Amino acid sequence: MEKVATDIYTFARLREEGFTYIDKTGILHEMASGESGAQFFIARPRRFGKSLAVSTLKSLFEGRRDLFQGLAIESMWDWSKKWPVLHLDMGTMQYDTVENLDRAMKDYFRAQAKALGIEVDSGRLIPEIFRDMIRTLAAKSSDGRCVVLIDEYDKPLLKALNTKDVIKFRDYLKPLYGVLKYEEPSQRFTFITGVSKFSKVSIFSDLNNLNDWTMHPGMATLFGYTHEEVLKYFPERIHALAEANGLDDKGAFDEIVRWYDGYRFHPAAEPVINPVSLGQCFQNREFNDYWSKTAVPTFLINILKKHPLDFSSVDITDNRLEAYEPENPDITTLLYQTGYLTIKGFRKMIGMRKYDLGFPNQEVQNSFVTRLAPAYTGLEPARAESAQLAAAEALYEHDVPKFIKALKAFFANIPYNLTDRQNEQMWQTIVYVVLKAIGAGVQSEVQTNDGRIDMVAEVPGEIYIIEFKLDRPASEAMDQIKGKEYAGKYALSKKRITLIGISFSSEKRTIVEELVEELEG
Image (tube, rainbow, N blue to C red; front, top):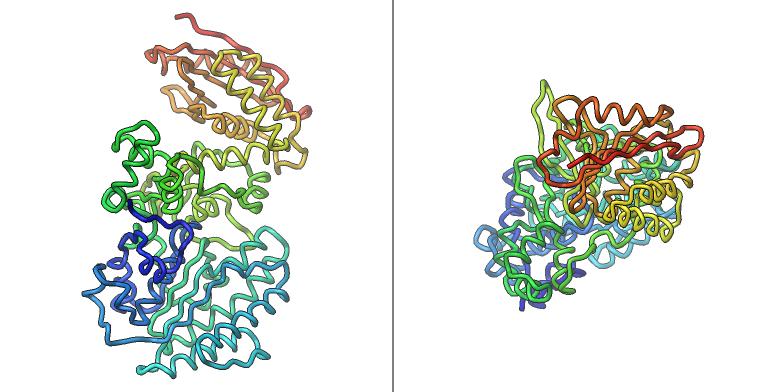
């Protein structure tokens, strides 16, 4: 059976120990060849193979032909040429103060210099040390140039995101990365990876010659696996997964797609499958949430508490999709760049593009909404899970009073400072998150021929049409459902249809009234 690695990010080790390597070297050649430029940046979500790509490039420029035998790039590359490589992994550089970060960086550069056989003056400023290392390495090369690879450039900054210290970290990193521009003549090739793209008025302002290929169509499948690649490289693993779950091979692959596929990094590109989640699924022979076993980042939750987002309908223009300022992060941009939302479609408008975003797959949806429900409502995770299960049972049992009671358990704990404002959208978003977390087929703002339904929830044999009102009677909600004939959209569904009008109180911060009617037939 194919050897699968989920915790090895070193290209040399992967190849030497016989683990399956999905050949991406043909795509890497487009950057590394020098025919399209010399300095590149690509942002991708965590655990998508960025570190492996950096390690692959390191081996390539060091001339390790033995590692590339049989791969696409072997016949394309001039193996007679080699360059010294400065590889900086910033993934461990997360500190609570700039002073601690600076001390760690000096220790790190000192260790890197020793490994490369060069000397640095650690008493100098970090940008000066970085500059001297580039110049010294370049001088050792036959053509007077070196290669610089920086993995997870933004990790030191992400820890401070949404805090008052974020500007200090940004200002510390800006001159460090600015060295890359001014020392460009000493670099044969430069590649930077990260999760986020900070706009050019901050960290990247001194790197205006950097090729940002985050949404380059040719790079859309560099990270992650295409359907064709999974079927080609893992046939035995798919078969073993199928047998363990009582499926045929096609059924197992369909489940892989449902759970781990769906990430699209260019609107015209094919979607890709999360490589680490797939590997762990193969190893465990079980479909589960692997990518987000750790908690959703605190800074995302804190922003979402203040600005609830309607996850059933998220769109963004292209100028907001790719970059943001660290002192004023855009929650939609952050969710896209961190992999919780992905491109589902786009529309060309006058002078801009508008992207439709959504959860990429079952794994991300399950993980995110499950963690978001207790964060929104203030309940402890165990109590939130209990209330969610009660809500699920109520819907499946067609017990609407029990369902309303479960929702009230959430709302009774919502902190007063949860959001900047109260409106129907806020309450609707919380209900959506709760229902999504329990596996209901829930949609918000459902279009009909005479308006938009606030929410529709579907479970086997049942359809619930729900309308919300804030500080207005539930009768208004019910009148709207009936007057606009929202149920007509589902008349041929052969499911029981239940109408629910709900009234929230901004003063009591919970449901104060509900009306329920079940349609005949």
